[in-house]
Length: 373
Ligand SMILES: *[C@@H]1O[C@H](CO)[C@@H](O)[C@H](O)[C@H]1NC(C)=O
Ligand SMILES: *[C@@H]1O[C@H](CO)[C@@H](O)[C@H](O)[C@H]1NC(C)=O
Ligand SMILES: *[C@@H]1O[C@H](CO)[C@@H](O)[C@H](O)[C@H]1NC(C)=O
Ligand SMILES: *[C@@H]1O[C@H](CO)[C@@H](O)[C@H](O)[C@H]1NC(C)=O
Ligand SMILES: *[C@@H]1O[C@H](CO)[C@@H](O)[C@H](O)[C@H]1NC(C)=O
Image (cartoon, rainbow, N blue to C red):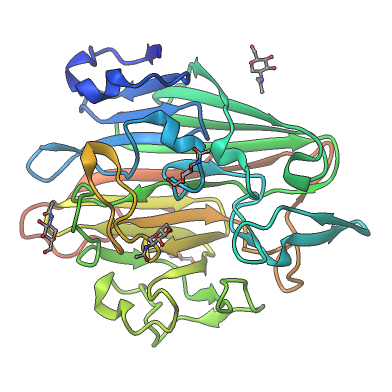
């Protein structure tokens, strides 16, 4: 494995022996800023393999789920999309089929009768090209993937890029872009699983505090396909318009397995998650209209990740920014079809900071206006 180190600091000391012992054929790029924040990106799935940020005491910790053995990322069965960029269409397509411009298309079903996250072999398991790029905003790495016409049943050849930039303000900027030579639905999402206390066996995110600036969700059936329309969160366990812990109302949710796994409608998004234990704060901003909030309901300790940690149920949370699930089949949602000559493009920002000692619960530290493209 070759390492492309963009950082001005030497990274050798930060790499564990296990990191070198693997025989993976994919490259890793490490971005590091002057505060010691590190973002490790691999070619498979444009995956964020490690994200190392300080806690309130300045101790560094890797807050995302993943594997040391990069081969585990090739396998959707083994990895529940840890850290991956999802495409061509994130989230679920009901009955794994849709009609576009009068023609019916079929995607391989991989979640009961539905297609999840691009089908059986979506962009999350593909090998992307990766190059260092110049950016005024920080250290950046650009990943590109050409999805051929007919890839998992989708029409048109799509040229997709994802650019990760690590700024000196401890932000990760994620720029998604795609073009196509034929009309195709598209919905790209970043699927990192976070635990702001550093993931670990028996550790949950139930004590993390959350703010989500969304007044509506897109309600779903038992297989997580939207039933159409919008539901106000006010007075339900889905409301995080006032900061509350993830665990305070999670067990009131009527789903199997129990937990959050729903798309929030975000007129102007800000979400903030903080952990009173570590003091880490994550603000999320996006230009996308929706965000799937998932609390690792389907994790059960069977997947063993970095540092031999098992990831238990509710061990991690995910915030997937996206267009609305199943928009290809749901007339009440905007149809997000990319056509030749058009450009699919948006930015999501994760910003990391820490709670000051004895401060009130976190409120968003950044405003949407700061994420201009
Ligand atoms: C994928 O992972 C599953 C679960 O660990 C394993 O049973 C299967 O053999 C793996 N498939 C490949 C192609 O490695
Ligand atoms: C990736 O790199 C290969 C080999 O250099 C090249 O043939 C291919 O066109 C590249 N793909 C993209 C999407 O840049
Ligand atoms: C996880 O919890 C179980 C049951 O309480 C305990 O036996 C085990 O030692 C714990 N593992 C770790 C790594 O703390
Ligand atoms: C929440 O979104 C509204 C617009 O819908 C915006 O006016 C407000 O500033 C946002 N709140 C935060 C804390 O970002
Ligand atoms: C745990 O999850 C894995 C992967 O989803 C699944 O194969 C396994 O059956 C589950 N185990 C239990 C005890 O539910």
